[in-house]
Amino acid sequence: MLRPRPTLRSGAIVAIAATASLVLAACGSSSNPLSGSSAKGSVVIGSANFPENELLAEIYSIALKAEGVKVTDKFNIGDREVYYPEVKKGAVSIIPEYNGTLLTVIVDPTSTAATTAQVNAALKQGLPSSLEILNSSAALDSDSVTVSQSFATAHHLTSSSSIAALAPYASTMVFGGPPEFATRSDGIAGLRKNYGLTFKSFDPLDESGPITIKALQDGTVQAADVFTTTPQIVTDHFVTLTDPKFNFAAQNVTPLVYKKAMTPTIVSTLNAISAKLTTADLLQIDTAVIVNHDSYQSVAMGWLKAQGLPN
Image 1 (cartoon, helix red, strand yellow):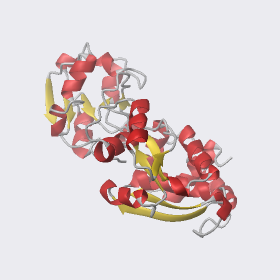
Image 2: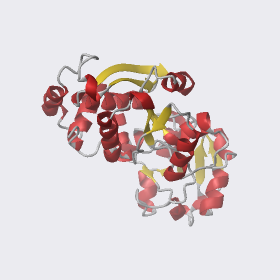
Image 3: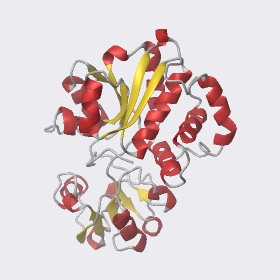
Image 4: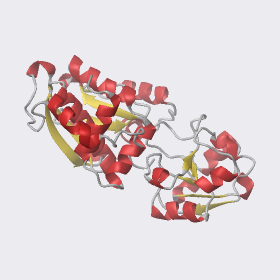
């Protein structure tokens, strides 16, 4: 994935109106960034400048305020090159990160770590002493091999099917993706190496954007590189295939934190969020904000309430 980007577990947003007041009550004076007990910590929560990351930061913020932590929100800072130095020096205490991109863009561009465990081990070894990562969530915002619902139905594919299931059909398929996918090690070459897939042809499109989506919709391509939290996976009922051989490196949502600002309350709260957050959740809450234009706060509160968080 060239940049960290942008469903709901069933019912997570349905009851927002009914539950928002309950969560707000739990948060106390959550609108005040200085609310909470100093004994439980005081943090600045930041986010990158795209919807998904701001939404994740909102989830962190609401949950920590509800636990009595003093929180100042500093959302929409910019890209990684802007916000990372702020976390490193402690001007920002917490930011939702994507472990694979953090590793290969900032910490070790030469790394070949692929699995979540490998990526996190490399981060723990390579991060400066002022920083650490907390527990990764199962939620992934990464590249994927995705097919249309009609193609999946015709070939008996589901979201549990592996990329390898395309082997009998690959020679008749056109694969779509950004131009660089044709030469990237985890692109066409990786799918051939890891899954034995040789496609009929490759169609250079955009990065999981409207051109790629339209090509899947109208059958111009039969499979494409689509980011796993692209809302059209929900709205167009696309089917994302599993990647058991980790052709695409892990991109788990993972809190990056400034060590000195951490307290047991902060760490346990963020780890509890990571323990609940799945790719399906991330896709649905992204859809609620990006497609349905629901407010960040209401979506974040709805997801927390649906998960029983904070405890």
